[in-house]
Image (tube, rainbow, N blue to C red; front, top):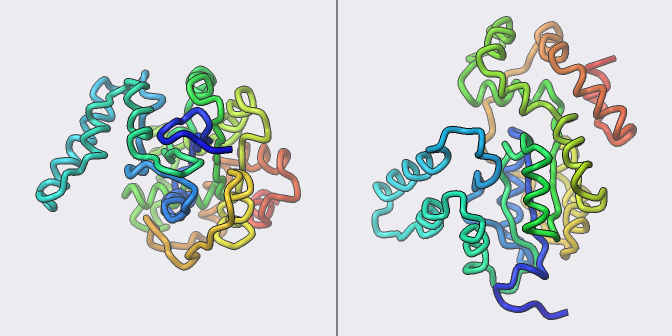
Length: 275
């Protein structure tokens, strides 16, 4: 079947919903190299799910990013950032953003990890605008993911600080909401049929089998990946057993939900943490 140039209707909309610190930067860059997939030049578009956030978000952040880019590369047009700023929350402009850039690709989309917090109303809205939506959700061992995110954000300098975990989570509850795999999965299940949601484990992503499954899910041909290329990686800082158990205690419900749902697919490290 031939596809009309710039027509989105017969193409698959790829929506990456996280999780944060679960390999989404690597996956985004892999998709950028795939000849059948068009990914937004801006990895995290932050278009959906902003109704409850500050009115200036996320446009203020994109304006700052554009200023920084212009200082570094004044000769470049930075058209994607300019279009994102003009877009604001206009869905027709969001669609035009892709229509004006897609060529022969059969899949188009973006990955914004905080989309893991989208509620069923927002997910239903996305499906109504893009009926051919396919969702990808990467799950990482909950303790590893939260520890990585907190270090990346500068909340922990080293493992000796983990005793402050309850205090930090109290101040920043988004840490737990972005670790809430059960809520994300249950919301996705209410809106999308199982065949249109692909769950993969971070621990199984960086291999030929993981990428083969991803391509099959999107109905595109296999394309080789660079498994040694890593992006936005937090400095390694291993936890002792006792320190790790502080994280596991906070996140036990998520471990149990995922193990109950996915059974043998769950990596062994998850099961060891709650054994």
